[in-house]
Image (cartoon, rainbow, N blue to C red; front, side, top):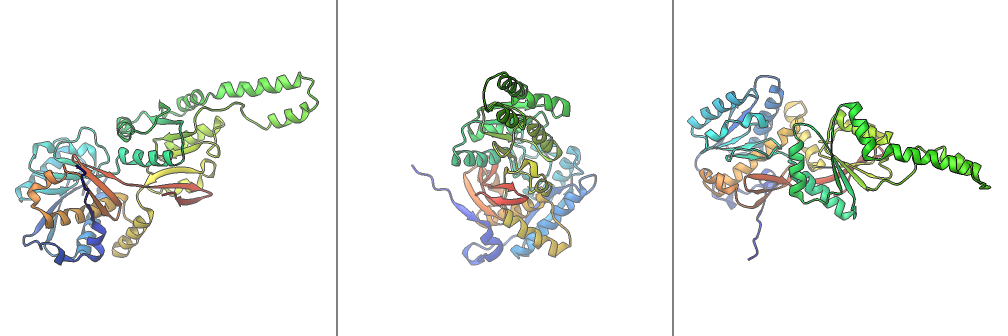
Length: 384
């Protein structure tokens, strides 16, 4: 039996919603919001509150009520605030943001939490991960590799607190792995590992041996050949075609710098990384270009940033875009069904479209259908 996946266009809700097509809600839609309002992450929390208010304004229905509560990015405070929302009769909550805040939420079984975390391991049963998880990213990378018939891809994963999320994403995406390496981010150890992975010392010695061989030969063109070899750094092929580096910020740049040092160039091998949220500093790193990565739809993100700036006079965090879409999703579902059954709805297979793009829901997880980009010649270019 063929299953039909219903695609619900949230963009239709935000921009041209015809309420007459749905049963108009007669009761107020109460949505809890768990974000840090105090502590080091309070600015992120405030940005999310503004995004949620913007979504409510765009939906333009005075039956929607948002109730923010502070998590302080602490599990105990998160549980206390969630319990307060439960006492108010609220069933659906956007947040918390960070994975460490989810620790005790399984104690509130009758609540559904749409967390902004991109981690999917060890989630309580009543928590749905709405972040851009590793499976979504590797699904998109796999699509790129298959379209370009890239067979030999090595994967470089830092030994960090998200290492197992990356491993799970690779496995879930069923991406073809040629070789998989874990690396230490400490600079000296990293360089040593990259040398071993790329067989740098062997290729370096190959070059020395070849120069020596030609010097000792009777080749009439040996001076020209030696001059050409002396412009090279190594000699010998590397038996992979692409490198997927699961890293970010300066640590990502350290890996790419080590690859360049070992004479592995993005001009000859595909350099691919994970979602960088359009980090503009990468545009300046001309030596590591072209570099490729999956991400949300850039045009939609830019339009959202303009809308947010016009409303509040400041730039939004990328997490605020997620929360903006989640308000629209909850609103749509409230028109279609009883919110008390939301936990069942999120177990079914459905697809939705918001400003962030299309995302698929199944088994209390949200996977995003991402775009794919490359940075080349200091320009961001959409591949698909």
